[in-house]
Image 1 (tube, rainbow, N blue to C red):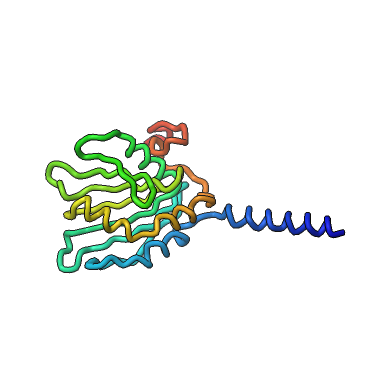
Image 2: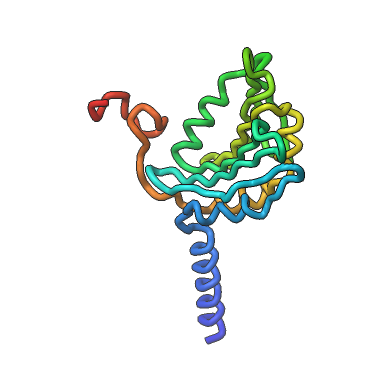
Length: 187
């Protein structure tokens, strides 16, 4: 009898772990990671997001107080859109692209050139299906990296790790996993 109870408890424990590790992720699950971050000297707008076409996205924009052209935007991206952005970041290293680590995560920094030397994007590789993307304007990449450290990247990574992204495909030609080519639907 005791053996049956032990096996039953073990099966229940496994079921609970499995259920908690595989839930359908929506943008509403990601927004709290952005809404609780207030950056000193910046005003943050209300976080927003969407869940569609195999993609879950939550974002928030911060503007420097008194200098509205100084912008820092943070986006958590999971699913198809994250895969497309990751393939863009593999373009190599040159004077405008470099790689580093932040809080143990691999990071790609893409600095602007030409007319916008103080703008760019930072991509934090959270998981094979998730990234944390920062776009910045009129601040240095060093300041943007400093602001990035205010976000709990580890907690975000843990949240998306066991999650299921709702099914869907992006427009043909944009998702590396669809096998479709541009024009497949007449575009």
